[in-house]
Amino acid sequence: MPSNLPVSSKPRYEKFVIFAREGNDTNTMVASAWEFDLEKPEEGLIRRARFAPSSWSASQLFLSQQGTAPAPEYVRHQVDDEGTSNGYIVHLYRIDYHKWDVQQVLETPQVFGLGANEESIFVDTDRGYRVIERRTGTIRTLDPSFKLVFDFGHDLWMVELAKPDKGLSGSFFDVKRGQLLDGRFAIPEDVKKRNFTVRLTPDRQRVAFWDLDYADDPQWRKPEGFVGQQVMTTDLIIQDLMSGKSRRFPFKSVCIPGSGVAVLSAGPRAEWNEDGTQISCVTLVGDDPKSPSEQVILDSATLRVVDRRKPPEPELWTTWEVKFLPVHLKSDYDALVGASEEHGRRVALAFLKSHGIDVRNMMRYGSDVAFSPDGKRMLIKLQRAEGFYFGDLEANALRLIRTPPALAHVSLSIHWVGYPPK
Image (cartoon, rainbow, N blue to C red):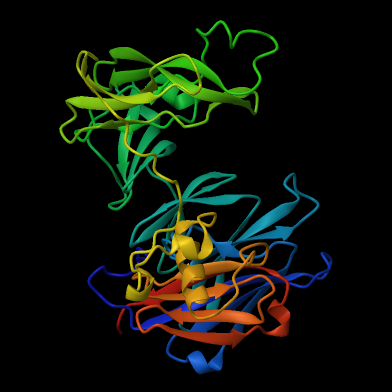
């Protein structure tokens, strides 16, 4: 659910919003916003707002999860500006989707969303971090000032304070409460310098991260590097945040060359257990890229191996997660459309195909899909289709919404927004 909606409250007003870039000439393109009101489906798609002329469409500030984003009322739009180093300037809007009141709250060379809670959003601008009050759009500086080092998800950040406390600049920030947590520590330098996949113990006392440089691997130091898949060794590092002491455990992984560094084709994976006494990682058994792998369970204090197991099946990373699957699709819906699409799109395509719609090669440029948070309703636009499809998966009903001429063959994105009962 969007973070401005109480979890216990069913939204009174619900709609799908489409952000589009209208036009085919980059000199005359204009960004716009359209709505499909779930209370008035017979009205179809209605244009509700036009933004500045631009070769970019507007988009919600935060990444959508199956069409639902935190702080959906904040919308970011890049506007062409040859006088800037980026070639554009950013307009940040606050939109009341009920009244369609569009308020510009910021114009700046750059702005990105960092996080949000019910009261505020946190953004990174060319002038530093800012806090914006969601209800009014009022902007203020971050106090105390810090830099985001790592986002652990679940509204917890590791941050570096601009003004160290007794020589220690590391802290944790609770995004939901908008507050720094008690306790200061030294941030591991390797974590500050690189974008690691960091894992934190439940008690926030230790971190696990990976040395991705392969500096100790003679093969990697060869000037010509390597070609194709190779088995390389790196270290899983466990560091106590309070004492600064660390331990290393070597593990092997299949790697491929890319972007000037060795990219782990499977990705280094490690997870703490619930009380932080053990950590597991997946390593290859041999030195051949086709060697089997195993999950190694380590005692987190000594890094002594306590168990070896067959590794779990790798998880398919996707931002799509459909929580509801209609009864008539509980058969293998992958067989209906194939497994090449992301999970949510596969459900959408399977639903369309069950209603006799030809969905082959449809999810390409100009296509998108979004679901309501309960996964029971969706709005989807397919390439070359004559319109948008609104699907009620629970009622097993499908409605075709004719595409307005302005939305034909344009870049667009679909999102769900809702409001609590008045």
